[in-house]
Picture (spheres, rainbow, N blue to C red):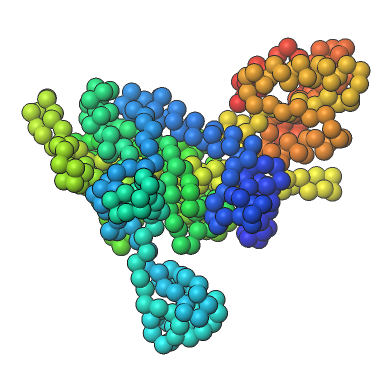
Length: 442
Ligand code: GAP
């Protein structure tokens, strides 16, 4: 299957089955902004829940927070985003399109007569590069004046740094410890695309781990290992995951070292999570800009220092896309193409589909009652319309790992058929035990 075709098929499946819709679609859509439908919201929630369990609930040394999206404008001066979170852009005076200055489609040097616009083909119409800030700006209060400018946060990390002291004091943690947060971030990306891979509104799952200077390299390595393990445990194909180390020209302004977890998408190897050694950049800058002391006193050694930070920063939407791409497959079955999303049962949006074989002989009643029982324990779906084969296929496309059919033997022998999505094999399980049977496997 050609790679572009795979993405097209995935986008169409996501709409058909209710994973992801284009934002404001009835108005023609909004560029690179997407909405999650009934199945998509469950899938992404499973990603976020697993992250939260691994990072916050399963550990004693990480606390969670939920900071506001709007923050004091000085935060973004301290963080370096006002000055440095920019892309160089060029405009075509002829067709009015705008490009990143390093767009590989541009021939020649922008601003020079030889430069050629990649859209209209005009020569010498591209402007000199100008810096464009990626932060969305808005105004707080009724008057649009400079004093009231606020930004939609371009990363969640800053909400953690400005709350570092609050959390330290209220939770009685000691260094080393971390703060985790899941939340929306916004970037006015110039070259967004590839479905939900790069969007203008997205969700991050970020954790900042505060450590004593000198121990940062060791913690950095530990976090690299733990984070890669987390991606493996999502059920992703390990051969399509790898590390990419940032060279000196790639490092962000705050980073002393950085590694990306990359996944092999149909459009190439791309970052899904970044692990950064941020040194004392963040707390040092916030101390300078706020005038508030942010150093740490270590009683055991009588030392004061600004903690170093090891950051793990993953995109919830990117991981969701990774799960979709990794799970998508097509198979030939009895001369027909079967489309399957082979999710790990733990992340599948719906765990079980319940089907009465026919709409008579007491089957709908038994199936409805079973469905009600299951739904109390995990997301389940009831479907009594169409041939049973078609109902299985719909659940295959939704990635539902188990299909339970109530048939003639259910009413006589109190057993149901459990059909496994991947192997399509069927087995009989006692009606009383089917809920436990599935719960154990999801
Ligand atoms: N606090 C560090 C930080 O924000 P980043 O590499 O810019 O680092 C971290 O972003 C993660 O956030 C990325 O690995 C990606 O998963 C996600 N991300 C960043 N920009 C995104 C966008 N425009 N759309 C979707 N996800 C994005």
